[in-house]
Length: 126
Image (cartoon, rainbow, N blue to C red; front, side):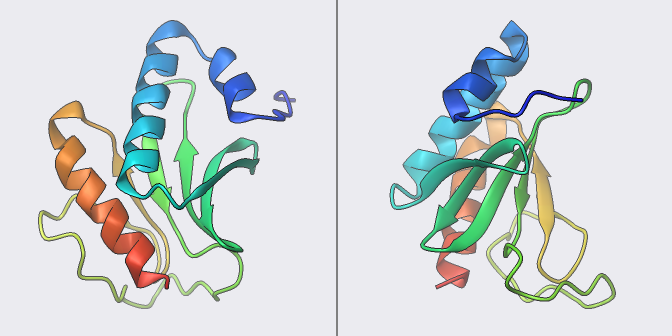
């Protein structure tokens, strides 16, 4: 069973050096894109919420690319067959999994574009 992390710092300390660097870069990107987000550990991963709405969660797999999951938390019903209602990704970086959940693979070269997507996602939740 994986560790149950109590803080984002504890989570980051558990990662191998390369994964930690990538996760710290993503953390900085998210908190810079929208300073009003609250950081916490939820689903045993770094999570970012606005008020009581969970919006962004890191996915740090043992192998493979780091991803940021964009979602609407548990308060909005998820429909995997419905089309998303979001126009804040003009570059098409998001992979959609349902009407309220998408993911983006992290790439340093896309950091400005990803920051814009994060801002648009948070704005769409308010």
